Length: 200
Image (cartoon, rainbow, N blue to C red; front, side, top):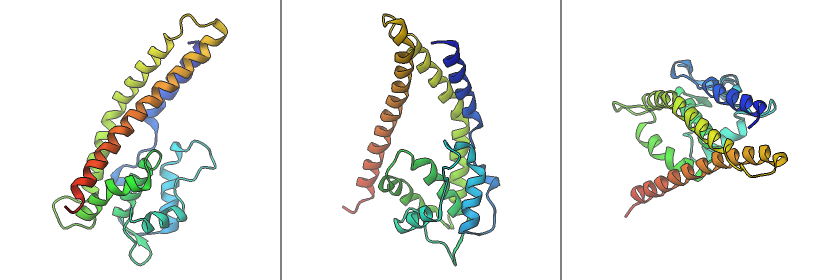
């Protein structure tokens, strides 16, 4: 691929490390009203927006998550730190999973650990997953680089005027296929959980 595309892809891969990730310690220990919740999410996840006008989280979304039982209802219109952590999980999952699938994943977590008196709570779970995710970024970046190198070597016999486009198209397709396969794994795990959790 040409140097412009090489530079662009390299820049995008490097920026993966800079995407907003809300550290557990950044979430307030006090309960927040809905406007405060949406402002917090907008401020801390703004680098993950594709377009400036994109909304990270709206009142309608929060109400919809509560209505669909993805999120426990607030207490006296205020959202706890645990609510905030659940909203972050929902935010990362909603881009590629249905609300029903997210509910299937988060439902058991909520029922077992939300406002739990057990040794583990939602904050502990978020902290562990957050640490795993941070460690995983470098592996993801390397996978993307390998996919790019494979795509860059594709279509050697294509006409020169089409080669660049076809190689970029191949790269996009490889990334899409990776997402597709991972989504298949997630859906099969969800289906298995649903069978286990269902009575009988």
